[in-house]
Amino acid sequence: MVLKSGSDARAGQLLDHRKAGQDGGTTRFTRRTMLSAAAAAALAGGEAVAAAGPKGKIVWAAHISLAPLWFDPADTLGLVTPFMLLYAMHDALIKPMPGTLAAPSLAASHTVSADGLSHEFALRDGVKFHNGEAVTADDVVFSFQRYRGNAARFLHSKVASVETPDPRRVIFRLHKPWMDFLTYYSSVTGAGWIVPRKYVERVGDDGFRKAPIGAGPYKFVSFDPGVELVLEAFEGYWRKMPSVKTLVFKVIPDESTRLVALKQREVDIAYSIRGELAEDLKRTPGLALKPVVINSPFWIYFADQWDPKSPWHDVRLRKAVDLAVDRASINRALTLGHSPITNSIVPRSYEYYWQPPATPYDPAQARALLAEAGFGGGIDAGDYFCDSSYGNLGEAVINNLREVGIRLKLRPIERAAFNKGYTEKKFRNLIQGSSGAFGNAAARMETFVVKDGAYVHGNYPDIDELFARQADEMDRGKREAILHRMQQLVSERVVYAPIWQLAFLNGQGSRVEESGLGLIEGHPYSAPYEDVRLKPDA
Image (cartoon, rainbow, N blue to C red):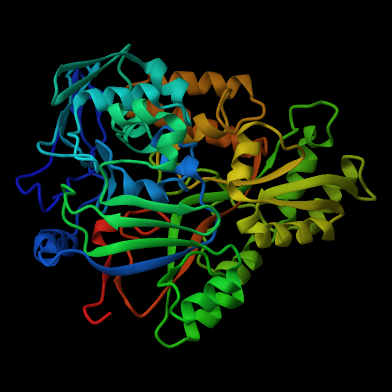
């Protein structure tokens, strides 16, 4: 298989997303998405737009506090949040882009051997990091070996060796054929996002987070923790010169304050405006509500279900929680009905997705199950941990559960600390989790269900066995059947109580011509940043 960049590298022409498999020793493709004519025309006109040079400033109101950990691709943890910043400061060999989930970027081409045992990348000519150093095969190998985030051990275990025949070529040799190598390398993890080896080794990990250097469309300027991040256009970016000179990400955790800042033109794009505030935004002249359905199911995780001494070990209690959540009403109240109710922790657009049966809102049956489990008078169920930026969702869920006799205390925690506690298995009882990371159903199972997954507190051996089988299966139909069975077992055992697949509601101000919201399928944030534009008169 060969993915090539096309003849017009400066215009950044993108390719169809192709899934490689094995069929009688030959490589097989299935077309997933097409680059629209409108998007192609916009990209082709990139040079004309950028000819005058980057101008102006766009300010985002970020709904969370930004963490320096997210400046480094080596530390991505199975969530989409770091990619809000990676798409600006860094670049990957291949990454999701408009119209395709596997666009050649720093790599001009990607070739898979007929036996599926090797993946070769040819680097694009003339690409440089922000400090002027050339991007080389050595940087690619260093970035892969340095990667320590989500699925690092799993990904590294699949690779037998990495070779660099010359400074422009890299060959990954696998122990055995694996259909998901490109998926993991290009989108599930940050292993394919390239950092400059010489600079990182000179300044160290801490120094790199303080002053990151990448090969993306924007350069790091300054970071004031809890206040703002400032980036400046990198005019030597290979795909095209950015249109906007300066990007500013202001940290504004309070939702109403973000909306006020948008109304007063202190910011141009405000992330996460929900409920009545979203209705207010829609009524405000000059502002636009931008809902984006993203790859981010939300769920309730029963962290203690494997402990025989815990009440959550009883599937009846877990099922009672599942039945007590009024998803439709919460959806209408918080996301104006835009969030699909899928009953799954796997995004519905993912390859190998299995649709679980709908869970009805049935508080009477929930109470009956509680009584059957020995909690007819209700239960004081401890803490309910959540990312503080979705504390209002947690409040709505807790209110539903209280109505059937399940009493919980909300524990909202700032996102970076919440993710750290989640991965370090510090939370007990119930956890409101989510993930908007790219990937497929296998990647979601690996991260959130299977033993040793980054967010897995306990495991079921039969599900683990199925995961090992699907990873080695090269027949797509058989693999799909195994992954469907895994998802079915997760649903039947109520390992999770899914809430919804989030529609991320954002506000856009009058100065913005192209926000970048929704350009990359399933991605919640503005991207690619080099495509973001101000109106000519802004």
